[in-house]
Length: 362
Image (cartoon, rainbow, N blue to C red; front, side):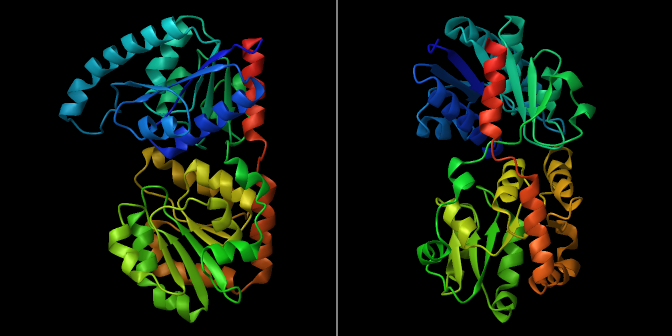
């Protein structure tokens, strides 16, 4: 039967949106006649990114609860009721064979109404510390696909399947040569390359670190591909030079990863999964302002296997240069980090998640 109907819901950040799109693409490959509908939160980035990927999306009027008393919080019950009613109407009309939630505010009301109507549901949890929406839904869904060990502290053990996180398909193959990648960024093949990633929005503290250490990187003979985020591009584009390449956003992540010898990155779940596949020595600087400090926990899951180095934002001033040079000056340490991170990679995650979706609709 190829005429399946699937609803996918997740959003708020790229970390919830890209996995949902990857899952939809794989289901579409298996079932070319299937129908797809995405459900997101109005005014969030999924309302733009999902149509760009070629899928229809409906928006719910929903936001998270702020930690302090605000007008938004007073509106929350009204938004929640409105979203539950709209989710109910979407599920009734579309009649999905399965609903997939990848986290974020909108997936809560949607999966809640789908489970009430008896539609089989699957959750995909990207982080090593489960998000609140997924924790609330855990008892009503059929399967929960996770990327880390030890997730039974959050979810019923018999529902958990460790699949890993979906990553962009071009990163699984990486069929670009190093010289092609360096040419693309107009870099010198005789220098080592540092790739700096702050996520799609950019990371203020990582950008400050790079700006403050440009002379230092030069003294080490490094060249830098610096993805500073679109909000910071105007501030830092003046630093562009023969050895410092400043980008708001990197459209060719595969080339950036192939060009890199060392990587500095945030520790969002998607980034961590990609960087395990890539297997380059990586320095994680987790964002301290995310829910439950989950980026630190994601990074520590690699540090515990000697697969990455983590430096907290609060410790960058005293620790960065020492930690950085310890890796830069030791071929043995570089090899260890590369080997151990690759051993943790789960390159078949998208296909494995779709296998689980097939099991719940049969």
